[in-house]
Length: 349
Image (tube, rainbow, N blue to C red; front, side, top):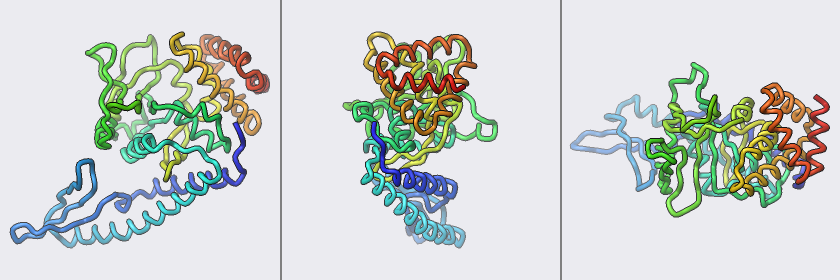
């Protein structure tokens, strides 16, 4: 782990502000495409034309009218503004790349952008796993050990229920992945009767996994109606999703996403490292190494976050405390400096 230039955090804050403002001001000008008129049997009809896998697609809007002409004029005006906003965002991304910010790989960035456009993150979807770890590094102004950034799995987690105010909205994740024309196929579960919770690109290792907190005895996949998909229930995930925040996923451009609070992410890694079976020991090691680097970064800049996160974990019961303590004991063997920093933070609570 190494510190990035101080100016980079200022750039990140500006980038995040612009992404939030652009998302709040989403309008017809944010759509990729154009209005076109077609003459058919003497009549003039208006369509919205856009690129899609397989070629250009046209959506019929109706016979040309003053209302549609006004809509087209509004689109042109707002599109000009949106192009300027995107150019400013891309400029900030370029500056951050030069400064040493970590980038999301191109294929994953394309998937993340599609999920954002489909409103997955506005409907409570949260990036977890290594992609979130990369994003948290830019947020905290640090560059992680390169060996901890390799992954082909893109993990998206969501609660089973959302606030009533947005419960009728939906983001169709399977349809969104299919629309990318990247070859995503559902991965069969252990039982043919169970719905798929993962989607994998044919012939490649790129994979999207859908997760949700386990409640009660761990059972099979859980349907998340707002995502039109099923998710795999995982223990301790409710702790990770209890405090999420908006963040910037950076590649050639940037996408507004939702990620866990950094201290919770670190302690959650301690928890899940204790759940890995022996066959996945390498993943448990990676969990501990990611936890260690996050703890060291937070202990220096935001020790109170670690204190509060540990305090909340302890309030969840003896099983939580016992599992986290086991993870901390193992962390002391692998990364003693990080374990000492966490014990100091814990004592502060």
